[in-house]
Length: 340
Image 1 (spheres, rainbow, N blue to C red):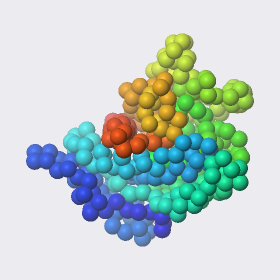
Image 2: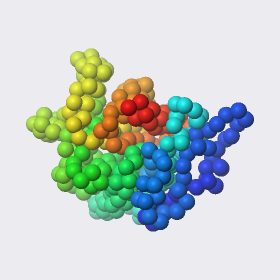
Image 3: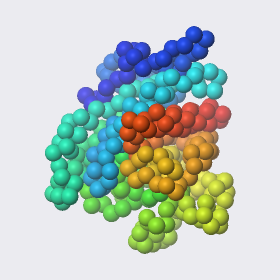
């Protein structure tokens, strides 16, 4: 795990803003001190949740998207460590592991031209390197009996999450994706738009539900694929929020029926949340409260095996707000699991 950079006491103390009479989340979390034998270290630690950062935007670049998703991890950790530690936040059950360092891939990426087809292919090879690192670490965390919470990076990392979880459990898994897009595009080389299609074709993903597809940004071929495959299902944002043909809560229940019989991953793409800085920011999406309700609903199921929050791309002025959003989603998920 030479790419794993552990969060340590020194970094935590620099970020913590301690106040008299208050107890902060970062004062009660667990940390590791060595990357030697990560599996055993995590397995033997008295925690339930392992938070991991993926500061990269290689997959977004490789999908011709706007870079910036590498900043979400840093924005999140600065807020998360400073929320309150109380009966509702369960800090003592959390290990903040740290982040995977993709500086080498990012340096190579900086030399590539997004309008050059050969450079796009080179960037997709870099995504394959990232896949290996992500799937290996998720495999170790799930094998150790813990629940990963993965923050940052592009939606390309859904592939590594699903592969690592599937290999750890020794069978395919299901997924629910809160997203404006399916990310089930053709297998043309790895990028942020085809993590789920690659995972399905390689036997790691079985039933898959996309919640809140945007009708303007989903191709006819994709709709045809989903309409003709029993293991694939979806609803659209417009059918729920615009035409009101469907009800949000009823659709969550329907989606759960599609995935609940197997362990499943929860994928939250910030592109689906209105006015959140992301790789494909939308002026018309679900409000934050619906994203939080969604995270709680699916987190409150024994088969929910991980949470992945991706595609947020905050610049400096928006970093604090994005960090707060992701911190809310993290704690909503943990609370939901603790209610089981």
